Length: 401
Image 1 (cartoon, rainbow, N blue to C red):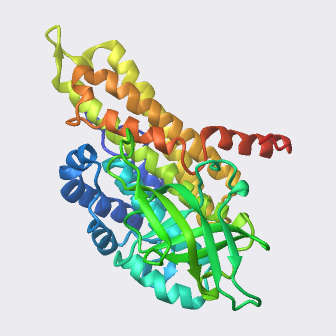
Image 2 (image 1 turned 180 degrees about the horizontal axis):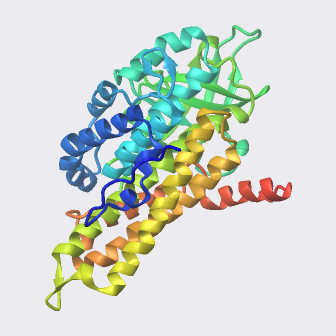
């Protein structure tokens, strides 16, 4: 009987090395993670403190993300890389290790804007937009959430009406969307609206008369990210702007499920970076003439956080393998999003305590990650909504009201 040799013993390990999670990945998956990590280290990390402090994200990053191959990387054709779900998840993890804003940009572009076109668009719509979006030559956003309708998108007030009779009549859209990532950068917005035939999706070029994107300022979270309000004031679109296969609320919700999967991995990137930062700091910081890392309370904190990070990583890989095989159900993605974001936020906060006063500066990442994760905890479904999704799967009872 053959056996696999154990890896050589070391004096110290990174948190995920203790779990040997790399052994669960194939060589292509590891290479993708390494490539994205190098990009984050060389291009993004040196600038993230300034971008976070100034609340900006350069538009030219879109082309760089396109050159990296991460925009719509899990889609097939149209200039997309066609990777598996696990590879996409690993890319999200490495991006969010830099900042949640980077992963949010890539997630909205690929899993919301591009996926909505890929899954529900006409061939003409796909040919027009997907290659440009994959290359970063165009930027997309996704308009579902409204000021009064987040967890209950079925109640949206944005309305689309035909301006004449027949299927070839123009559409006229009116309404407001809120908390839209990439809104002020976008060239095209996927907008969801009530119609006489139910909820439908539309592709709205952002230079269409009546379309306005207003940047949201004074944010305490996701500062290295563009967040916007979209206003549609008698926006007139041709019949060809409608996504022909998007029928009912299930269409936008399926897009959100794609984005949530990226968050399952992405949040772990923020947690890993926070933990690795805290470990390095406690080893160099002396307290009472001893390294902070030599105290029992410090090691207890580091051990507990490593356990949660490793368990979250095992769950993420498992969900990715399921998604690549038979597919993962929405409530299963909810398990991952609920657990991993909740635990990542707890890790980032705990790491901040180990940094003492230094932890409140942008020189160290944990508090920046914690601030970002407060938004990640809320978007793509609040923790409460994911708990209710899991509860419905367990009991058969819908408790959303």
